[in-house]
Image (tube, rainbow over all chains, first blue to last red; front, side):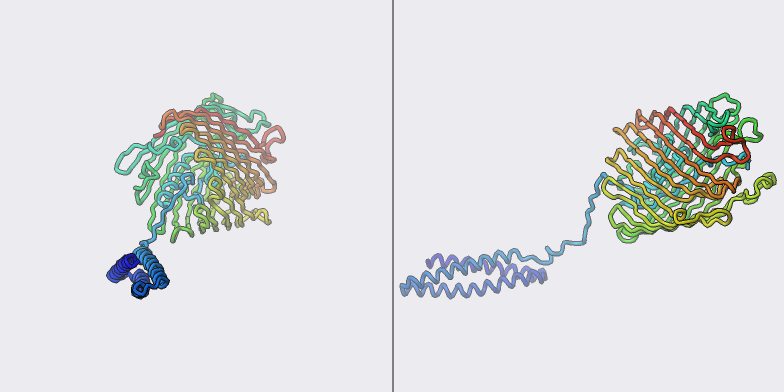
Length: 142
Length: 458
């Protein structure tokens, strides 16, 4: 149980380090949106690490006292905290910043049905020459 | 929409329309009604043209139509000897120089598009009838120029087209009548246009100036009606769908006559023989473009006033109403069916104007890029107002125009086909001072023409 608790502890430490690395990257990239997100995950992770440290200490104490109930309780706390930190680590990895939210200049792709007429059918029609033969109206020739 | 492509298409349409106009009787928007002239190019063909220089194509063509004309002089069957028929041969040649590329839908297009066209039609009546022989031969040249460019939100277009028409006179003045000469008409239409389409082109404004010189040659029988028309058109449209626009158009014309003063001989007979200048104004709103993917429409309704300086002018709500409705259904790229109705007042050669109510239909079909079928017909009901030679009389005509052509393209540059043309006029009018019922003076006629057509175009 202590050995399992120590493994949890190592895993949580690595997760917190990874989140701290992501925080540094965000600072270097001056990506404030991602930095806020990662920092939030890091703070929560550190709080959980503090809880985990307390649970680990209490676990060892309960083992020394041969307190079976207390030992199980502290191990359960440690397991839950480990799961929370794991989730926070995954959320930190998924934090997105400006580089992903800014998709570049707007580009419009227009798909025109090839069956539609290619000329602009909304333009005013072209003028036409008067070529109709005039009707007969007189024998007089002008 | 690629505006440059639109410009090229518009210019090409204009130039090809000019060639067809030599024989087409009526035009409704983009739809040609009546017998269609020889084809400009194979259906859907883009690979023709001789490459004479970098980005410059020369299109050439020649064709012959041989057939039968049932009524050379547009005579009435109710008049004795009024109908004279003849064989007819027409030879057509044309050339066009353009920088519009063969691949119209490609990306590389010139910034300035131009097109120069010239054509010549020779018509021969083969009959040995003494009356027909006087009008046996006729040469009818045509020419056109188109120039267009786009710059940012602006598009500019300059076009000019000229055509000379020569046709035998009416039956009443053939035969032994002294000085009978053909009806010869020279018409030139120049147009300059600026179009502004800001932003994505949802709103578009077009300002166009048209100048038409319409000259009936001396002794043609209608030289008093030679005219000069200046026209200003303002069209504002709003595309509420990508291919559909609501529009408003204001259209003001100034029509004056070149021979305002009749000759000394005419003066005695034509106390009211002068044509009246007029300033027709049309204001209308409407819709143009696609209703669905396969149905397009051009619908407009508005006000018209002829503003004639003398004589009759249009009156009443119905007489002041301009209406146009045209619906086309295209089940595929290879066929199109169109029906339409048009109500207007039209400046007339033989009167101040006539009220026109016309219905028409057209069907075009292409088959396998080889066969082109064109069927069309138009019925026009015309009420003449202010007859020049008979101002106290009324006149109502019903004119029928129909045409059918079927061409088969043996190669993409050679074709053979058949054609049929019907022109008919049913009128309640008789020429003043001439005969009576069944004894001359009737102005109704029926003219049938059939042709075999053969030609090359490249």
